[in-house]
Amino acid sequence: MKTTRFNVVIVIGIAIMGMISCTNSPTKKAEVLEDAKDNVLVAEQDLNQAVSDSINEYTRYKMEAETKLIENDLKIAALKTNMKAERIEVRTKYEKELNELEQKNANLKVSISEYKENDVNKWEKFKELVNQDIEEIKLAISRMSENRK
Image (tube, rainbow, N blue to C red; front, side, top):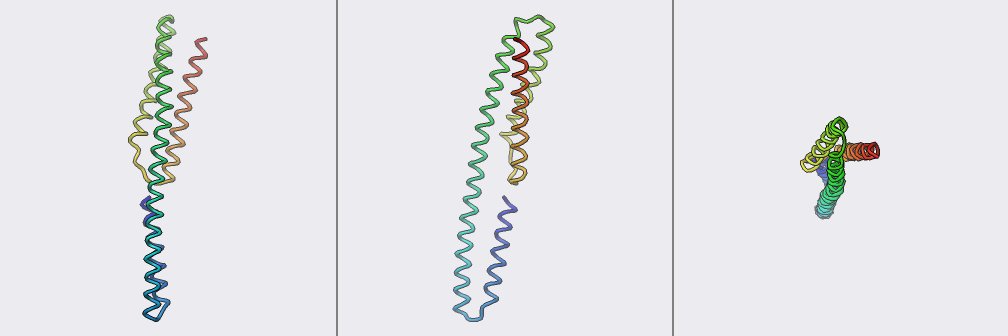
C-alpha cells in the first residue's frame, strides 16, 4: 500500500509539473493548477477506496479462515474423544499425530490474527500458504478418520 500511495503521488506531481511548465499564460496556469488539484482529489479518493477494500478483504478472509480452523479443532477434539476406546499403542500413535495437527492449527490462527503486511503480493502469497496449510490439516484429519473405520 505504501508503495502504491507513493507511486500515485509521484505520478500526479510529475503531471502537475508538466502541465504547469507547458503553458505560458497565467489564466492557463490557473486552469491547469485547478485541474491538477481535482486530479489529486480523485486520486486520494481512489486510494482511500483501495485501502478500504483491502481492509474489507482481509477481514472477510480472516473470518473464513478462522471458521475453517475452528472446524478443524472440532474434528480433532472428536477424534481425540473417540481414541479413548482404542488400544494404548494405537491411541498413543494417534494422540501424537492429533496433537501435532492441533498445534499447526493453533499456529495458523496466530499467524492470521497477527498478519500486518500491506504489500499486495505478500498478502496473496500469505493467503496461498495459509489455504494450503489449512487443506493439509483437513486432509490429515480425514485420513485419520478413515483409518479408524
